[in-house]
Length: 266
Image 1 (spheres, rainbow, N blue to C red):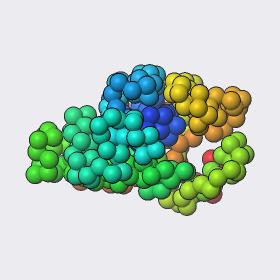
Image 2: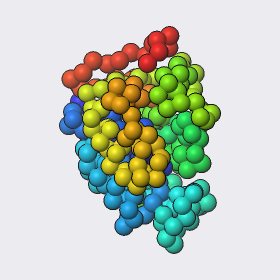
Image 3: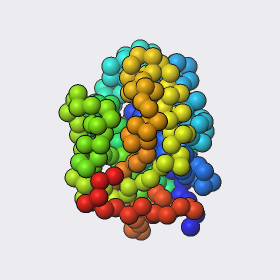
């Protein structure tokens, strides 16, 4: 089975590595086209340079930036509005252009909660990506953004309830987290063979390590704790194209598919 091409759309530099770094590395290793779109930060900024290092480590080439400002760092994109304040139509148009250029089989993004933290940029990236993944296939929408292309599916990076206890054992129980019922998860992906790449990509976001953000936490963990935290990725599938599929499109390649067992803790 040919491994499907993959476009990851996330809010900030480092989200791609933390949420889907293993999946990106896995698909790239199988020879699939992979790419990353980041909603915030502008070309030429320090975090954009770190993002470029991370995507190269993951085999995803040069990053693509929508160029809006981070909700909490207005100078992250000088002269541009914060992503959450930008006209929705403009944000969708910019992302549609990238989808039509990359022409991915699969699009991956944040879940409706925006991941465990519920960051407003994460939540808005989910909204914009849901709209853009559908609009990209409609020829009368955004004709200036390129020829229409309909991805086959949209997969939402998420965390099931069953994973929260294991995560808390590693990172502590300092904040409320947003997780989903285990039964909602349609693909559980074992990324242990690509863990070293995933960790290296996370740590490539050096400014986040320096300021004590999540990559700093990863940097401080022992190898076994890192493995517990980062070796599994979870996704919820949304059908977009005319034909149905299943989780095997995420795990296609010379490795076994990991079936979803709602009763088994990851």
